[in-house]
Length: 287
Ligand code: SF4
Picture 1 (cartoon, rainbow, N blue to C red):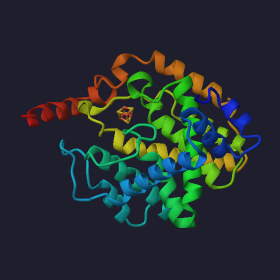
Picture 2: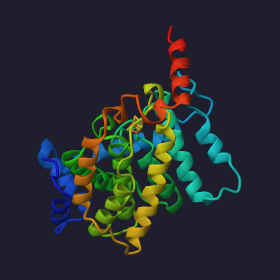
Picture 3: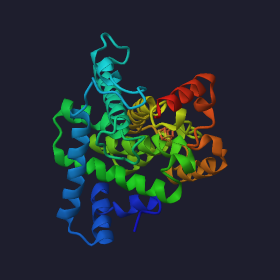
């Protein structure tokens, strides 16, 4: 059964590391062994790595709106953010574009938000030579927090706005990063809470109804937010509102968003003159 609260998740991790508590829950839920549970997540980690490594800078989405920007970012010189953050940004763009081009991605938690987790985990894995085992542990941590968000709020843009997709991915990624750095369960909860509260109210407004604009670049925001919140939590900075209460607030905000701002492509950026022009152009492309 999915974790109902972050508090429950933290209490289950009194005897084991938090990631292990999620493994054990999965074993019980799906009636599998720890080895089987771990292997399944390992497969997802490998798929995540492939979603970055198989990026083709020449490829364009059917709409022509996405492609090539991950490589452009990677090749930029003297970035304000520095080398490491440049890699994070480039990776988020690459996976977002790969998804728009119908490439294979890991929906963590959704296809639209699939760039956030690999964007923060792969550059760290490569820079610090972390083991694949550690990265799989990170995915279990993310899955634990993701379960709570899905249970108490939503991970669907149509239901809760983009806060539920990019926001959830950002919260999950922030918790996973804290694990990668050896932080405590409490620090993971603070990182997730801070990441979620930073994106509360974010609307879902895909231009022309395509998961491209603003989705691809919002993955960058989700990844950078996750990095900052993980660093804050690791530095001992705490969220004033407990993680479960932030998630509950996210659910309430999601329910109060008008339908125009929940993946209908009728509000926000989709309703701008440029958004309408792109939508119109797309209808001409459809045979
Ligand atoms: S804007 Fe909507 S479709 Fe795009 S990533 Fe956010 S939730 Fe998904």
